[in-house]
Amino acid sequence: MNMKWITQALITSCLAVATTAHAVNPASGGYAGLIVGANYAANFPFTYLNTSGELENGQIGHNIMASIGGQVGLRWCDNYRAEAEFIFNNSPYSYLRLGDVSIHSPHTSTGLRMNGKTDSGIATINIFYDIFADFSSSVVPYLGIGAGYAYIKSDIKLYLNEVRVTADNNPNIVGTIPTSKTASAPVGQAILGLSYYMDDYSYFALDLRYIMSADQTLFTQQVQQTSNTITARYQLYSFNLIFNGAFDAVA
Image (cartoon, rainbow, N blue to C red; front, side, top):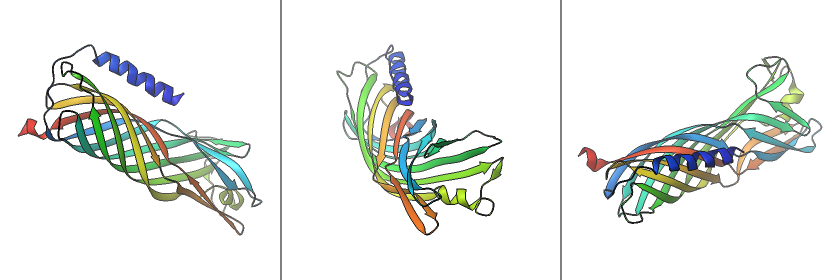
């Protein structure tokens, strides 16, 4: 449902800007810009150790949250350009499911609640192909692919009646919950978007991006004398607003 909403938003935005058009001849050379957006980290299933030291199935779900970053690029012909991009993503957890028990993430609760998030800083090199038809329109679709590296931090805290659960007040629960972890991994990126050129030197864009990492360790766990490592692929969907301006425009 989240990706359906994001796709509908992109289509609606594209139709809105497509009503205005003028001839465009994009300037070659360097440019830089900003990117802001909304992201949704895919839910990931895992196996965990229960209090008896046996493996059970679990899952973490995420909420939609914000992304912000920037890019420096080079256009070397009308259709092709390359960018070095860095973006920060914040993805709070909506629930933690352990076996048949689901722990949610309200701001306050008289029972057991969870507070957690996955933060990521992602640096990629992207190659774009701008699909100019006959240069008569300022509205230009584009495709992109990228590769790079991500630094990912996952964090979970439990609260019982607004008191944080620790090894001192409830060692059994703490032993069951995965321990926070930081990891880094290579990532790949796919991009589909639409640009609106205000002139030959600057443009706004809206796009959808999908990022996926290689398998990585997201959490570690220790129950009694048994340890467990939870691995998964980090997958992120985002809907973004971008502004880029050519360096020549301010020369």
